[in-house]
Image (cartoon, rainbow, N blue to C red):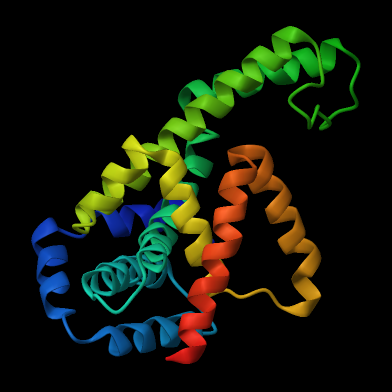
Length: 231
């Protein structure tokens, strides 16, 4: 999301909760104004970490206001609640990858690569590749990053009064991801040149959540698209 994620997160998390609560109240009835400000900030030729933090803040404010309105489908609300929070959570995960325990694990994995004769800078990409001690360390590394990402994700949802979405994420992850994917397909309809990408998404969703989940995503997306065209 940001060229300097650490500074962006520092600026974002420096926003007082009282300021967030005030902005949430001020956002009522101003969804279009918020979207316009986000677009203007994203169009700036040069952005600072403070600019990126402002965009991240506004994404969350926009999500809260959209989720407050009855006219939007549940799936669309879940997508927007997740969108801004996931960008920030991914940045936090990326920072954690080079810190503390993750840095130690990375160093140990690098030594294994050297032991096994891999050229400098190369490593095994697939989880099933490499010796068992490497795979075990990689699994631990990924688990730490998932934990960081999930923790920051739900923290942000609650910080911006999107508590229902944080609870759904924690208590029924499959339903959350189904709703998010339907909302994504409604918000970002597939373009002809991106059909192959959409097929990859179908394949991923099938493997991750099963045929019934994918069928529901596809049918519900079609239903919502029809309703949108008819309105």
